[in-house]
Length: 471
Ligand SMILES: [Zn+2]
Image (cartoon, protein in one colour):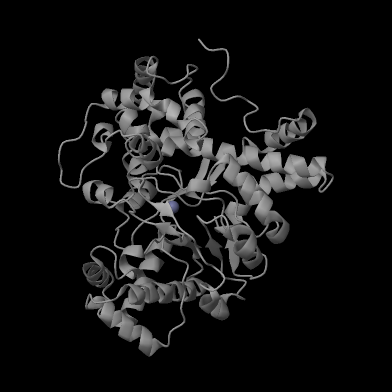
């Protein structure tokens, strides 16, 4: 038995005792607040079927690209971690073997948020006190495996135990949302809502774009062979998503480029996209135009718009060809916002009824571009640190670089953005600790009062996400 807890009560709180005391007091006021999760990638099927999670490896390792990108970087083949191959070829299927392999490499995660999240989960979800290692792997596996068979570890029970008030998934317009429907019709009170993520039907270079647009037409009864019919189909589908509880759209474009083409030009570009012969620049221009079209629709139907630009997707071609997308081979790139968003902002930037939440993987844009933009345009808000920057230091850099220009109230609270359901409480807890630490420093410097800090801490942990995403 180890004397040191896996996840210490003062984790991430300031070292200086006076500031730590203030941070603790603030943290005490927010640590038990419900979780609002307005953006993420969990599977609605879990909550529809409410079947037991199969085993520790398939729950905690196989779906988590943060986990296997690190092991892959150290030469561990992804097949050995049970990641499915595109060609259906053999991969490891014994969950205990996968778990042992992960445990033997657990030291690789030191300094990464993955270790914080994982230790938090082992301790606070499963009651484990022993550090994970090659030696403890089997015993910890057995504890988790046994727990997963118990009713209190079924997906809905965990959802309730985590205190999740609302959980948004991310869904393609072609999805029939059957699992969301099943959740709604089940009589269970848990709120699981979709988000409209149309990348596969707005990106001419997305896999199957032409067929996807045709299917969009079939589903909606609109003639998506025409530009006007295509836009109408989006309106129909957005309405359906909103009726299923969606309050937001999400756009994962390579850049933040927007455009404001004349309808004739947009229509001609769409025809070219449907003919399958867009150049890279034309595909970029079409996606850019679609961001502006989506903003126009958001102004009509009230869906909050999220833009997640700047990931160079599938940078590792070998991994992409062997395992498909979202396998840890995405790399951040430089992202321009000031010029890229100008066409959209010229049209819609002054609309106070429109909410566009901007995210970045390019931290150099926080102080120079994003905080000034979000601190000025009524339509813009700044999303929390994302993906590679969803970490303690990433949060500290974000608050430091953004707050003095954009304040707190042009930001939208925290997004866990995760596929790893069990890490949700850990991720929100890390954000709450970092925000309380930041506020405690401000109180210590007499930049804000204690009562103000308590109010802000509450808003950062809960109120802002609820308000920005209309939840
Ligand atoms: Zn996401």
